[in-house]
Image 1 (cartoon, rainbow, N blue to C red):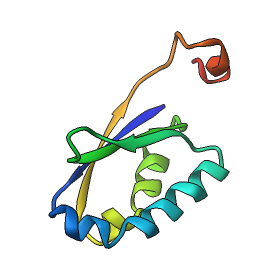
Image 2: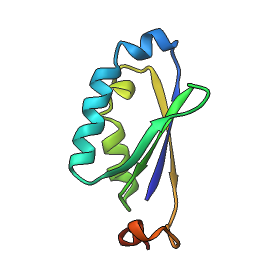
Image 3: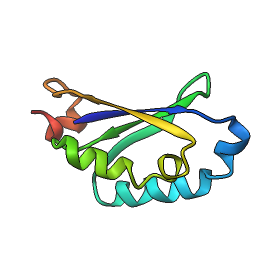
Image 4: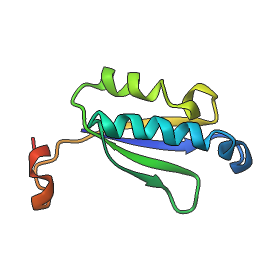
Amino acid sequence: MFILNINYTKPLKEIEQHLQEHREFLDYYYDTGKFLMSGPKEPRSGGIILCNTKDPKEAFDIISRDPFFVKKVAEYELIEFFPVKTSGDLNQYKK
């Protein structure tokens, strides 16, 4: 499992120009089961995505399709972790 930590590198005005495309990207990966949760950080300096993959190469491949990444308005940090304890609704994702 990966936390995809997104950090904006451009002003919010430029980020918002790509927001609809970014949301479509999110929807696609929610439909595939790869994304479990996402949202903006507070303050709004980027966002977080919980990505359901065990393969760092696959995580990077997914990131490389995000319009924020493609348009170079954000940078990503991949943080790998191994879920060993979850709420009951998330038991299927335990390691």
